Every structure is written in C-alpha cells, then in structure tokens.
Image (cartoon, rainbow, N blue to C red):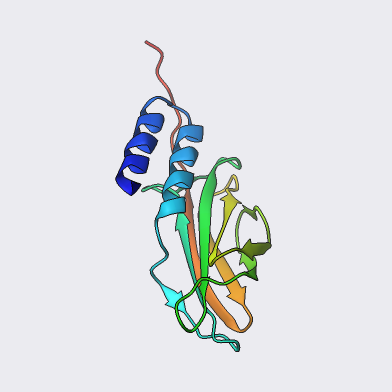
Amino acid sequence: MAILKKIKAIQILRSSLRWGGLCLLLILLACSEQVTDIVGPSNSGFSIGIKAFYGTAGLPADGNSKATIRVEVFDENGRGVNTTVTLTTTRGTLGTESLTVTNGVGITTLTSVSTPGTASIVATVENASATTIVPIVNISTAVSSN
C-alpha cells in the first residue's frame, strides 16, 4: 500500500511544475514514513522522535515553501500515546508551537524564510527533547519560455 501511495505521489509531482506539487509529495511521504531517531525516556517514560521532510536540496528560501515535520511519541512499551508536544524553531515559522499527538503521531509544517540558513526544530515532551534540522537554501527558479 505504501508503494502505491508513493507512486501516486510521484505522478502528482510530475503533473505539477510548481513547488506546491513538491509540498504535496512531502506531505504524502511524511504520513507513511516513520521517525527513526528516538530520544527518551521522559519523566513518564515517553520517548520522542522528530523528522523533517523537505526534498533533497533543502527548503527554498522564498518565505512560502513548507517542510513537513513529523513527531512521534511512545510509551515504555512502544505504544503510541496521546499527548501535547512543544515545538520551537531557530528559523522560519511553525504551523503550531503546541502540537497535539494522537496515537503517537503529530504532523505540522515549517514555512521557510527569505534568507538562507539552517532551521533547527526541537520537539519536547516533558523533559525529553528531539531535534531535526531543515536547510533553507537559495534555489534558482528561473524558467525559460520556449
């Protein structure tokens, strides 16, 4: 099923020459790909992980492009939990700073800024924090008309 989702996402991307198609692809992939770097436990035994999805070159420094941020929280038995995670970033704007995690998964976005740099996103549950980075890069958007 995940392969069919990825094939469909690639077809959608091919039909669009705008960054919107790329964002849609990233959102679809983020919904199915798991976080692999897990930190914890917290005071209550929770473990937390965070992963960013932004393409291979980075997030364009255009003030509009979005990366998908996926956060996962598990109890000591590996079961997804319902909780609230605090998010912070050093660059760009988060879709929310207080993310509701349901059945272990929460998804939000990071909107780029107009100057290149590296965004460091930190997700915290109780006393456990996990970090991911998103490079915000200059990308030429020149299009030739033929």
